[in-house]
Amino acid sequence: MSIPNAKTVSFSKTTITELMIPSYANFGGKIHGGILLSLIDKVAYACASKHAANYCVTVSVDNVDFLEPVEVGDLVHLRASVVHVGNSSLVVGISVIAENVKEGSVKKTNNSYVTMVAKGDDDKPTQVPALILESQEEVRLFLEAIKRKELKKDFRSKIKEVSAVIMDQAHEELLEHERCILDLKNFTL
Ligand SMILES: CCCCCCCCCCCCCCCC(=O)SCCNC(=O)CCNC(=O)[C@H](O)C(C)(C)COP(=O)(O)OP(=O)(O)OC[C@H]1O[C@@H](n2cnc3c(N)ncnc32)[C@H](O)[C@@H]1OP(=O)(O)O
Image (cartoon, rainbow, N blue to C red):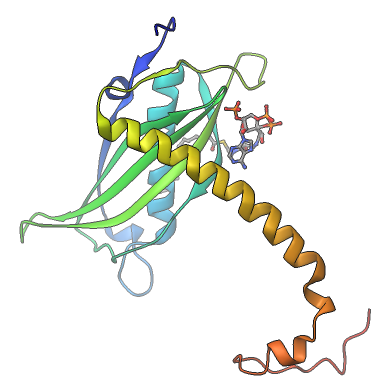
């Protein structure tokens, strides 16, 4: 099947490398999570806007787990590629790797998926080019992104249901073995 303007995954593959300077560190001497999140957003934007050939906005960031601390002096490599496209949305997969050049060691610190939406000159969502999948891995990632989208939708509706009825249950019993103290005597509606 041929779709006009379709683009390969490799067309927009983007890598950013950033040196972790002392001003990026927190009080514990490790790199702030917010710095890494900002870099994730930056590389996701670069990759998505290249595929879309349009301005893109971030709508959702999934799976942000900080697996290992990042040190001052590390080189952080962020590798981004489009794993899925919808109509106006794109999912960008990002892997973050910290390299200690002195020791010659590398560690994986984050693996995230960012959903971005392309916007046209009218500031409305606009269609993005289709994605040409050239390997089994690209097919796997595309299918996985569809599944993740479905699971997220289910989760959202389930959490809505739970939250609507949660206070109807005997919460004293549910909280019995939790590390919290109920002290509602001063509470007024
Ligand atoms: C040292 C420190 C330095 C700091 C230095 C910083 C540097 C780092 C900067 C780098 C540069 C980056 C730059 C990025 C750009 C921004 O940062 S943007 C700012 C943050 N994001 C925003 O403001 C977006 C706000 N949201 C919106 O405007 C609207 O929700 C949107 C995105 C236009 C969507 O509107 P809508 O009415 O839901 O539109 P709708 O047509 O229903 O949906 C459009 C698509 O979005 C999808 N969608 C909607 N909501 C969701 C959702 N929650 N999840 C998934 N998909 C969704 C729909 O499924 C649909 O997909 P398609 O079927 O078209 O594929």
